[in-house]
Length: 67
Image (cartoon, rainbow, N blue to C red):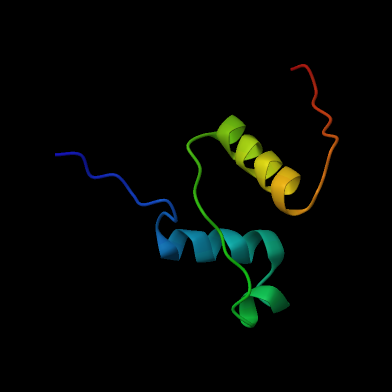
């Protein structure tokens, strides 16, 4: 029996993390326009964000440190 979270993760954790990161008064979340999701690791999170920015926001260049 594998009890994995769905793609959006735990709603209470997502709300708390978004509030901590963006502030409790963030307009996008107050208006229901904001969304957050969990990722499988720090590197995985960066990959998800890079894919989103490439496909939806038309970003073309990304800079990474080594390491």
